[in-house]
Image 1 (cartoon, one colour):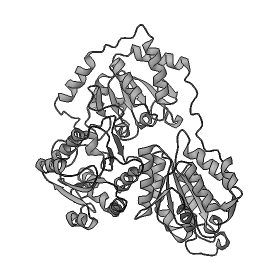
Image 2 (cartoon, helix red, strand yellow; image 1 turned 45 degrees about the vertical axis):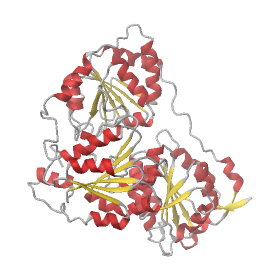
Image 3 (spheres, rainbow, N blue to C red; image 1 turned 135 degrees about the vertical axis):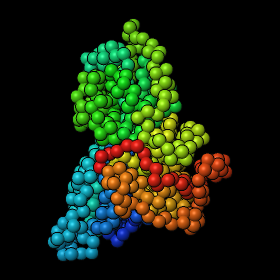
Image 4 (cartoon, one colour; image 1 turned 180 degrees about the vertical axis):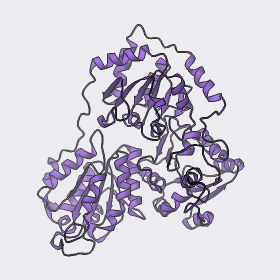
Length: 555
């Protein structure tokens, strides 16, 4: 039986488990939209293709499943680029389907032609550096093999986005439906069992250490290793610090939690590691600029390091490790725990660990606290959020710095900081996309600058009845830029301040709730009187634009 290529593509998406696709139609992608009409896949109309790509990324983050976005040729495809680049940086399995002008007009200057012929842009080439696989499908005979390669990239141990660009006429050509049954759409076994000698070495280093510290990153969350990290921590009373993206890998309200490690954090984890640690156990954390305090040698010198990561490219990328293991973090730790429990020399002592952490957190601010004053309302909001919603919420965060210091994430909540390529305008569409995977109380955190890059997507939430809380930190400036110009450019402020619209009227025009927060009493009203579970709310929190956190990125 023959079916159209457009129907073949949609059937492939269904087999990949995709149940929602985010995008905007255009003439060159309409055959696939027509096939979606008869599919159980829900087609979500975004307000901008960039928002659609961010929605797909948010869906993938929240669900762990493959997500999809769709756009027409030319400007539709190029508008996806920032969102796809974000997915690439975050290693998210997102498939982007784009249209293309018909092949029979390639090189002739057709409307929105993006084939790379005749001086036109080459949209597939634009995506190659930001995808794991990008292919223009100009014939039907190799389409099944293209889809197999796409599946491998999407389902790999370290996944990433895929682009399929399909010319308008090819979408309507016929292909044998039976070829769908020949597609290999499954994930391969990820890792071989861990070498026993490596586990023995791990045990030896761990049991000889006096004050080990775990630094857990998003790799531990991706490996579904929350419970095993927590079990190891409690078994040997090992403190746990997280990278920014690893927040919530263990309950941050646990007495063994050091909170976040990073240049924009409270400094508790940094101080403990530098002053006390003799063995650093790095679990799926890339020691990037933020986590490493701009690659501060004090974090790494004078102590041994064990590193476990599923991505071989991360091993010893920044530092030399005494022991480096490439493998699934959960599997490695489970094997380690088996050895530790069988070890008669095991001592779960280190009874002073919790006392040391308690003393550290209750001590004076010292030189490490980056927030001296001026941010009490942001702090109060996040502490109230943690108290009112200790479990089963999502937070998508473009602001990052407040939550890193003030928000204690439990292991049953999902916290997603936008620290990949750190694009502004990400939190709202990403949070909306997540709601299509599983609806739960969700918060999008961002500043007033980033808000105006994506606020049109609020109507997408309204149109599809997806509840959402938009938390807007309002200071009338690009806060990071103003801070840097204050610290590094002698207060020569340029292009950072702006006049905001009336957010109350804007919320009313969207048909959503609005709450201005200028005091802790306003916060009481917010959490007591507003529906933060099933409504769309714009929460406008006043921040002083001339209060600056005490850290420097040196640029």
